[in-house]
Length: 437
Ligand code: XUL
Ligand code: CO
Image (cartoon, rainbow, N blue to C red; front, side, top):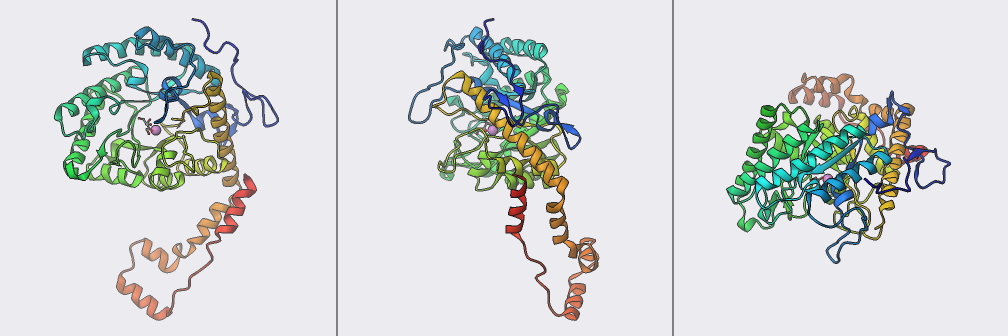
């Protein structure tokens, strides 16, 4: 096959002084941080859907992307050729993982049978390419939101046949993920929500969503798939309200329906923004519940209210993200999946390299800065000291469950007043972070 990026060599680490736009300045895959290589900390994944299927279209205009390798048809040979291009790109970039939706890699056929056959034909090439390059599948997922049959949702559709169709799709995509040695499987509830409550039985829809996920857990067992299941929170878009609206809502849903042992969360930066939270907040909510699984690292634009899926470039963002990831023990099965697309105006193939290099360097810096903050220890020490009153005396008694309301009354009647303790010192801490950025 003719190379799709003939003028681009493997992207090398050249260090912070390099002026080469096709080199890493900070991502040095073998460099050890906190006892682990950057490659193993960050576990970068390239997304098939935006990187190889993104057209550059937006609600106001047609596609702009120039992709000379793509003949624009929905043929199997075009899909297979595109798969080989993807692996050339990921190899040159040096990312260890990739992710896909079933419908990104292979075209939908006229019937479910034909669709599955198409998927198998492309999965065969994906398997060959994974073997040839050593690139692995971080997670697979299903697109059960683009086709018109999913107009009312997939597992939450008012039509039971649509639930059944989505189940067939997830079954097949899970099997292909398993066949490709995928390390996880993600459920993003594309249209699992509502546009108006006037036509919606919310309780019934949520029960159907839970039923669907239980069926997926059962099938996972049946086929012996050992990968991690993830739920990806998002509050809105395309529906007005999505049931998996944020980390807290997902955790509550998973607990209510006895699904929590089977799932972790895949937290996406731009989704956190849409939910009115920071990424750090979403990571902390998931981490505190032992459910921080993986991240989608794309960000939004501060001046646009929708999911613009941009590559991460903010060092504050990557620092705070990595502080939380390190705090909860790092990625076990997940990684940093970009789920980002180049801007509509960045239509040349080389822009795909600039975008990923920038995102990987931003995360490498975030990782190094977070590790330096942790090594310094002042931030953690501050937080520890802030709660010192809980380590001894009455605080320790309360935490140990050894103080009743009556005991607390006796204690406070004797003491007379509660001291507000020490200042929160937000500005001092912000300055401390800036010492490292
Ligand atoms: C949509 C989104 C999805 C999921 C996978 O906003 O983030 O691409 O990551 O379905
Ligand atoms: Co995502």
